[in-house]
Image (cartoon, rainbow, N blue to C red; front, side):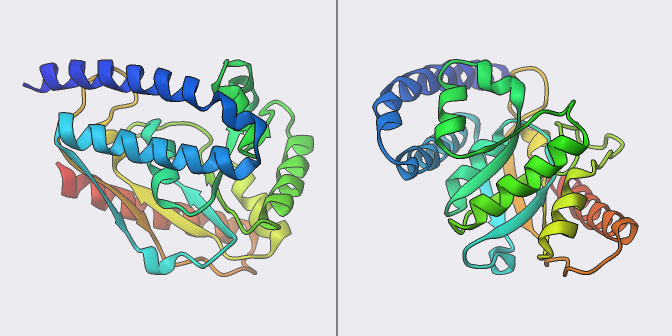
Length: 237
């Protein structure tokens, strides 16, 4: 049954994504908000397909930990649904994404038009300075910046490897960081097309206040995200 559901979902997902991507093209001529709103509805559509075809529900916990307006969110990353899902429930989300994605037709266009932050991971200090400057600019529009703290997808249970980007933002912006735990990889694995029924949970944790030393902050954000993520994984097994 899981195989049949997974194959059906794969077909529906790519068909839906292709058609939706084509229908979004005229929005490139309008304001940025048109594209981000369309991406939000796209995320809602993927969420609906997961529930109807795969028996996967999506739950958001800890909404009380999200401030109104601009927010800096440090998230776990286990699969590509982490992006689609977040578009569906954050008011005006903005993601940090790698430069290579800009070469992909349609996706690269919408990433640029949607005002996402593009980083060159080989740029080191220059890339970090650009990341901070671009984030300041996005916060003028009261957007919620989501940065995947490890920089790439990690399978559930994999050894964590947190990168310096979130520390640079925390230090230079002098604002709270909201950790976000999740268990998406249990139901939508990093590799392969199998989708497993259950409940995907995105959980916003209490904010880490500004002012901590770099090392203390990195230990704190990793401990909070990993502890909550492991609990969600165990809950979903």
